[in-house]
Image 1: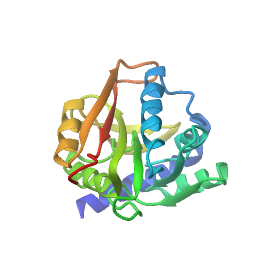
Image 2: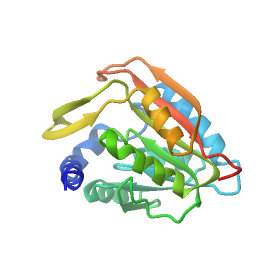
Image 3: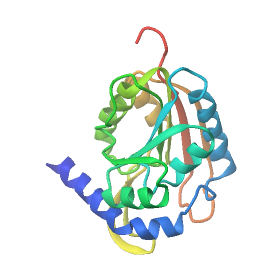
Image 4: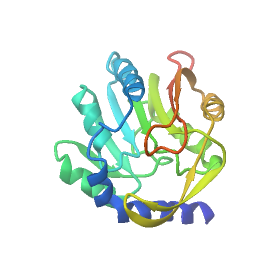
Length: 218
């Protein structure tokens, strides 16, 4: 029941801020050069094999989905917030979006070349991450890749205002070591990691991890 209540809170908050989120973050220009470097590495991996479909897991209003599509990725987006999905469909009608949570991805086993989780795990309590990462592993074809970004730290922060509106939302902080260990427990191998200091409007260091589902024996 607690997990369901938490998910409902995240969903309703992002439903409420969807329009202001799209106005304040209309595209991928906010991301740092190092972020784009990790995204480019991910794109290079997921476009080189036979399976090339990617899910933007926690796509929000679709700004990063659109970036991936512009880089030649066959990508669709899912988000737990129907409000965010509605804005994404309106802004990017040429792309496919659906409402779904990180732990229940609407894809068959071993289908995808990539899972792109751009700051989408930051509202998942630590005890939920094993289930989320197991789901990422399930939908990836052997040899597939996952890219995850998050804010670095420990514990959580309570957000009372976000995207210009009053909210009540918990944001989780993770160390790269914690995420790498949980990914390994799920069967992944972490192949690259990047940590950078905060920039303007960022309160914590930021991290991006690139993980790989082994091609053999899985």
